[in-house]
Image (cartoon, rainbow, N blue to C red; front, side, top):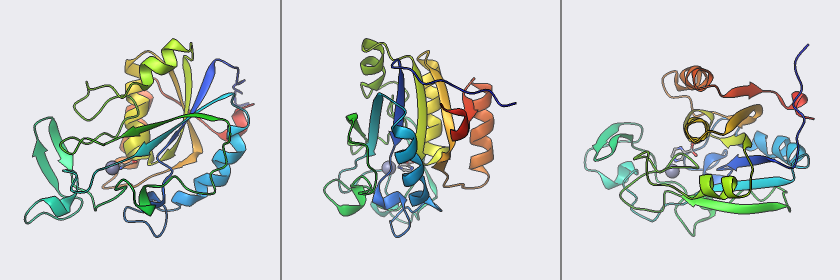
Length: 212
Ligand code: VGL
Ligand code: ZN
């Protein structure tokens, strides 16, 4: 029998980057990205505390391949904080693609944390920018509210969800990822690798039927 997880008022659901650019038709579309919307709507009602993240880049963000001569999306570049994958322009602030999906229906969402707003640095994780040390403030917010157990859903499993899960562990949170609430970009096996990394960091992989 699979264990169930009983949600309490000390838990938080974190909905990562469910934005048009990561959904079919968007500039960095994730396969089946929009399929997470009804799943998340269903799950969200079981949580008293819900937080959203929003990938939010200025035009000309350095993670965009279009900013670099002779570079194409999904190639790499060395940034001062390490290796960076270059992306198609996406989630440019003020554009439709940056908006949170309109069918996401979570009236009791309490916070939207924006990330990636510094032109020179990318930010996958909900907790730290890609230098691994500049905080977004979410860790402090959750801790101050005594919310120590987090459940992640959203896009993409192998980038922003994974980085958030690993940083969540580093900050001492009890971290769960809800399988059907996520979809992946999956570049060169990155999805399988993501689940391995999360497992070894003590992230728990759960299915929505286990959440009661
Ligand atoms: C993401 C690539 C670039 C994500 C954001 O939300 O997973 N991936 N920016
Ligand atoms: Zn981005």
